[in-house]
Length: 212
Image (tube, rainbow, N blue to C red; front, side, top):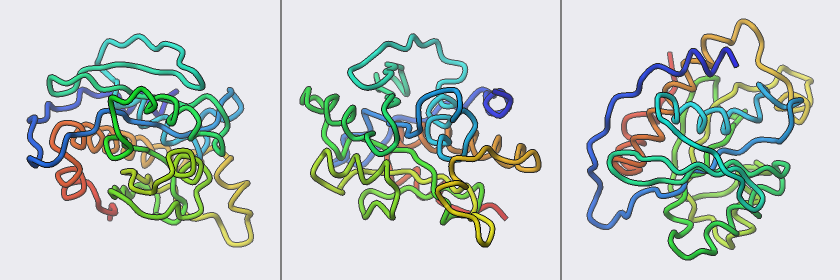
């Protein structure tokens, strides 16, 4: 995908620092819908961001029960990246099954998703909170039985007046948005890597901002 190619420049290394009480992110989940018909749509920006963070890294995806899983090294740590292969409103099933292994907690999981309440290009990372009406987040929270799950929302811009938000998020980005989306993916990849290597506070302090 052209947008992903533009976001595939080498990412800088991140120092492995985090607060003493923070174990660090061990699982990153990119939300989206399966199938070629949804490639490049606004609702799949979470999946595209997780793919972008793997740029310049060797990886071998493998099938997981309800998802596609990649294990990769960031800042000397092995981290799992998961894309649920069910539809958005069933995303939590694969996350629940992965965490059932007991190695990681919901608090060690970063869920990356779209948000049409944010301007295109904005990034908002939080440790906890409501699903904000996002079906994928609602599925994850419901499956895990908690809202104490870190999430990174990527702004896709608001739907035009009169357009159904459900139709809007399932539509592709416009040609005039190509550069903005490529920039968002690059910064989102950096924010994900910062959350893994430096901790959520560092990622929030540096990347929780709205582009001018």
